Amino acid sequence: MEKMKFLQLQASALFLISSFAHARHFSKNSFLSLSAAVSSIEKRISRDEGGRGIGDVVINGELLKAGKHIANMKKGQTVVILSGFPCCVERNPPSETDGPPGAFAIARSCVALGLKVVILTDECNEDVFISGAANVGIWAGGGNLKLESFPPESEWGEGEAKRLIEIAETSCDHIVAIERPGRAADGSCYTMRGISMDHLLAPLDKLIDLAKSSKPELIVTAIGDGGNELGFGKQYEATIKSKNILMPDKCVSVVSCDHLIVASVSNWGGFALAAAAGMAMHDGKEKGGGEGWESDPKKVVEKCLPSEIDETRILAGCVEAGCRDGVSGEMVSTVDGMSLEITLDCLRDVRELAGQGWR
Image (cartoon, rainbow, N blue to C red; front, side):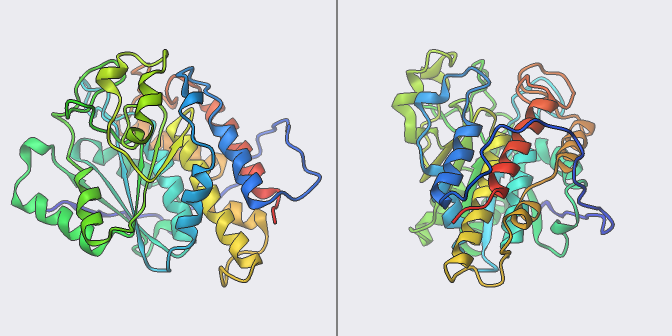
């Protein structure tokens, strides 16, 4: 049976600006080029706070390319976001806190740019996404954001296959995979500890081939932090050489993409892509494009990025539905073993870098 849920969001939700004090360490004295501004964000999200050795895997410039492509999409086109990483396989739900908040950040920016968004996930992750979405804000109303879930591949039938084909043919103009399991060399998907997640996963990666068969020019952007996510096939050789990834030959994904954004935490990559898309749209307006778009970089930030309070509420909503930290396994508002404050610190930095102005 088709499972489609339009996200019901409270019209009274407010976008609040955090009052957290935070010492700044970025230069504020001059405008940067768009390329330099986005590059500074790219460097911020890929410091490797998780100690996974991602430095050799980062491809400089991928964030700008992905952001520009989304900014250049036509109003009314659809971005499909694949997310949900059920690595807590013995829990119910098995969902982790990395992924949903980043997916919502990207969705927010896309909607601000006049695009529609469909988030695809597994049935086991559905409640987490619905609970998190209840706190995203009023921007997601009016049918701009839709969530669809699919059962595990072992339970697929003709109905599920037809539904995915329909999405590929009618509602897919750009694909973003954020913290989405990617098939390894043996065809299975693994956690960082080498545990198979196949029994929980819907084969959402099939959407890529389905969509590209009718739209060869379609772009796939992938965001990940550990090498076992969809998209790391683009950097497969560099990733399996990392000394910080357990069982790389077994776990690293062979599924490639067009643009690979490597971040310390995938949610942070979501913040970065949300910012880059808005910045690229603003830059286009300054050069005669992006008609009707914001001229003030700070307004771009408010439209395209969550505030600290938004992010705190979204993460709390996910945890309320049973979401867990993928490293500690605890049902708390931490991500990959890092405190909420570390995530908010990164969000503050991305917001500040995006709001300084560029030309």
